[in-house]
Figure 1 (cartoon, rainbow, N blue to C red):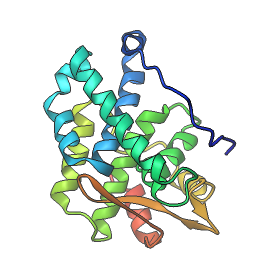
Figure 2: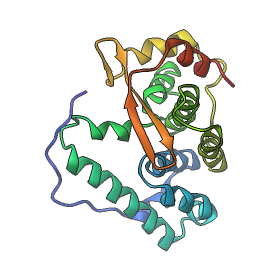
Figure 3: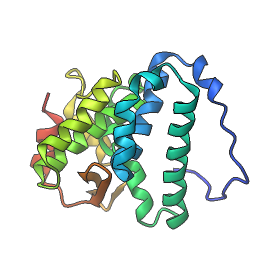
Length: 206
């Protein structure tokens, strides 16, 4: 909840650092990468599907393209909404339920993998609210699964505990939980018009 809006003068990215990470941390980072495809760039989403093996083997040219595209998308969003007044919320796709899952697990599920679960949950919720077709939701889930990430909430996590954390999320305003929901691959909306019954159904689906 404490942060800064001062922008950096420059950003340095050393792709060799990726080779030092355990696989789970690499997967966690790639969950955030998939997020960018879902929220803003259908072509990038398909790029991630096409180059999965190159990405896992950290092929330099492909990795550099991937990182550059993520930076471009985030910079474009932040430039238009520097102080998180509206558009910037789309960067939280997968994080509403993801943060709650992460907290309910006592942070045993690392952030990126919790976001992967949250993205699948958000896609399911979008289907239930009539915003997204089942085939596109399946595409999102299948890509996340192809990268070896979890797609469902572990059964041992208490659903009421998850709901408690949902209500304390930073995207909750006046008791209203805001969700970032896909309307297609590359497009999302931010809405609080979600029925509690649909949230319950998503939290209890497998």
